[in-house]
Amino acid sequence: MGEDSIRHLLPKICANGSIRYFWNPSATLRKLGLTPEPLGDDYNKAKSRALELNSCADELRRFSKQGNNGPAPGSLSRLVNDYKKSPEFSALKQRTQDDYIYYLEKIELDFGQLPVAALKARTIKEYYRRLVAEKSPTWAYHIISTIRVLLSWAVSEEWISYNPALSVRIKSPKKRTVTWQSQQTETLIAQAKELKWLSLAAMFRVYDCIGQSPIDIRTLRAGDYNGEAIASTRAKTGVSDAPIPLWPNVIVALDEYLATRPSLPPEAPLFAHDDLGGYWNESTLAKTFALIRKKAGLPSHLQMQDWRRTAATEAGASGGTVDEIRALQRHSTRTAALHYVHPDDRYVAAAQQKRLEQRNKTRSQGELTERKLDKSQNDRVQKVRMADPA
Image (tube, rainbow, N blue to C red):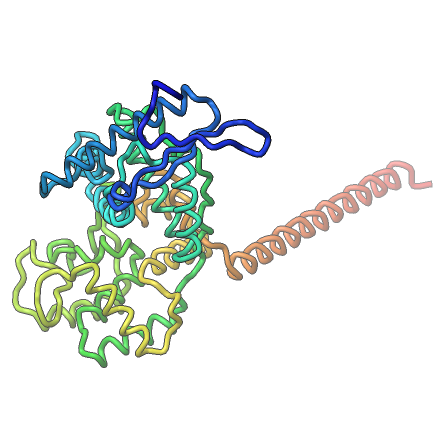
């Protein structure tokens, strides 16, 4: 290297005599979140990358000395901050924005101080493996997918030249197949009433009936209910359709609950927190649901969103068409509608019954044709005998 001495660029002689280069930050830089990085055996490429990393390190070090309260220049936290202020982010549906914000906050906890330019595919791959081991494949999938979106935006804004997260193979989570049994729903509702969560008893009844997403039912307004049906628009996509008719027993239960509350303006929450009033907060609802489920002795794998799959599966098992299921669940495409249908024993029984009916129909048609042929043949024989009595 000689005259081209580069800070933190470290050459190492391998057993075969070749030289490999590494970027080896100081202890001070490591405390700021920077980690060593192998740079390969090409000196020019190693030099270029080391200079890039040194530039990031200088920005990070200047920031730490200034004591600024904002994200460090060039850091992942600064990237997240800029992305959330971008027109591209603002153009997303509110539900999608909320999902991204949730996962971006988790990512910042691990990589917030790290310069974006220092984030390599190997680092992301190790992060993915750790999330799979410590959390779950589903959680890891959502986190890495969010990183991919963030870094793709970084490329478009010339923060980096390529997206290292796209080089990491991630496994799609298995399709969830859990559905509610009617008795399980009744048990949960009875427990909610026993614990004096009357709003949730009514809410669970509506969940079970119309099969919408948890957020779309949690945020229903009084004006969305007309005494017979509920008008629901899917928050994630903005898709709506005709109001969804409620079953008679659901209307009775909902009316009984609403009778316990004073006259409600159309914009008031349809289901208000029993103690605090107002809309149920998402996290509070999730925790209270888990408590009721545990008290009711129901399996911990049952979730509120599983009522959505239950409704779609029941609709399919009863002969509902793809378009009928799509309209019920407010999907934008047929493919999305089928995602929630989980064929079960009812589908098998229905298929066997239809096969049997078809076979019986075919057999009956065959026997009828055979009788017609026999009759036709008998008629011809009779005509011949009449024409030639001898």
